[in-house]
Image (cartoon, rainbow, N blue to C red; front, side):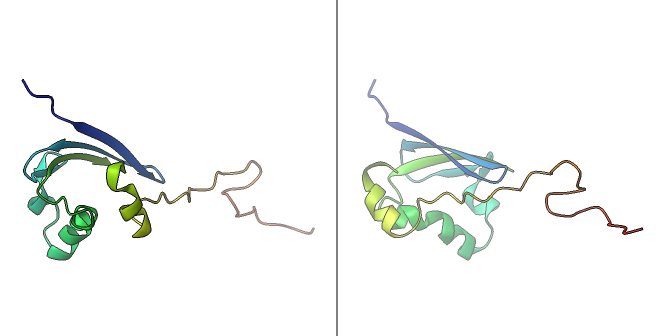
Length: 110
């Protein structure tokens, strides 16, 4: 039985998490148990998902299984295109003595 290579990666932004399992295959993409074309109905959204694979010239080389809620050998190519970035912005925590992160309770002078 031949060994199949599997790559597992995680991407995060705020509280969202996307996990991907990438195995050698013929280009089948499943997102949350649904087909790629069903999950992203417009061509422009499909192109955004396929852009890293098209940049690396590996569109039909791997099967992708993606679980989304809420780089490999071609890392340098994808990094120059800006596809390997994590957005570090998070929701600011609520502070004590205030109703929110920045908002203050109403001030009364008298």
